[in-house]
Image (cartoon, rainbow, N blue to C red; front, top):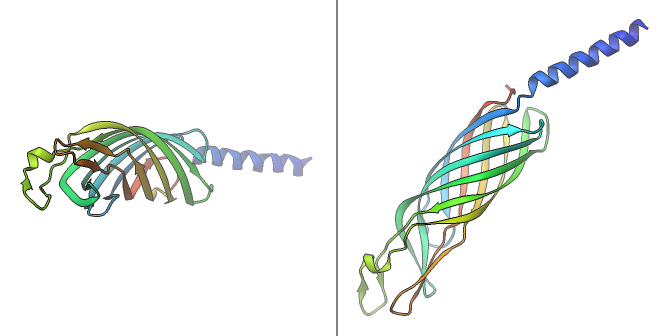
Length: 199
């Protein structure tokens, strides 16, 4: 009986320690590098913040707010060029699954939300004349997009790679030329979580 009682006390202590270790609320802050898709694109800085709530010790839901500075790739009738360096923002609902419950925690995740696509302008030479930048400006817009992520946590440290799929912007000029501006980008991030209960 004494052994059984001691075993029950041990299990209760382990359960209590586990419960204290898991705290549902956490807040991620990250800095990183944003690289737009497409030839001729130029990468730049990104910053993001993401409050999260843990449904359990392995599943988090959150809201990611991100700002990225980059030069998007632009295609004009099959010819590649790049636009000006501009900022783009997003608000994305996220779901993240942590693959382990140890201190080193690989994870995968998905998200969907609203992306504010920055406008851009450029000079295009069609071989006969130079077109003014005002004639080939791609206006800012808002688009629904998707996000996929992989990465790992080590304690409160977080490193991840995210692919943001955002539909391209297409416009037609009076010269019958078609402009396609790529809006998708890859983000590589380093950051840390405030809260969450793991040291």
